[in-house]
Image 1 (cartoon, rainbow, N blue to C red):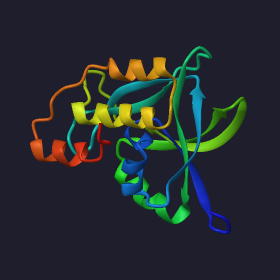
Image 2: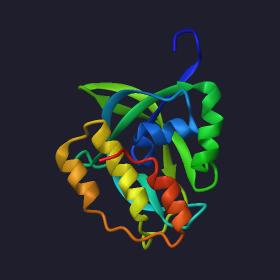
Image 3: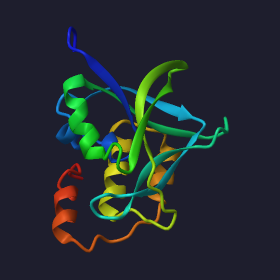
Length: 171
């Protein structure tokens, strides 16, 4: 994206799936796979539209904890639409973090939850999007197995489920 102002966003949930993120920010291009140290992945963010559990990078401060994900580059012009889709200021906030990529550090913006409920569970389709994105970008197999093991629940809204599962790659 030479000559165009861009931003880097670290995706760790359903936005890891390139097709999903491109719906929200068409210019999004994956540029690196990395990890955010001192955080764990939680599924406790309350979804604004459906009330189910969404992913969050929860700061622990422990060097033993990390969240794997994908750094995407997108045009600055696409960032406001992504902010709206993510609910920036209404369930998510953002911060600049250092992502570890092949031993080096890369700054990126990350969304983190501000509306948390530990009792929430993700819908099956949401978990499937997260797992598909992790597989698409070759995240560590052990990490993918951890994602697959997360307890999820059925979405009572079949139309919403169908809309989201249509984004999943054919198997």
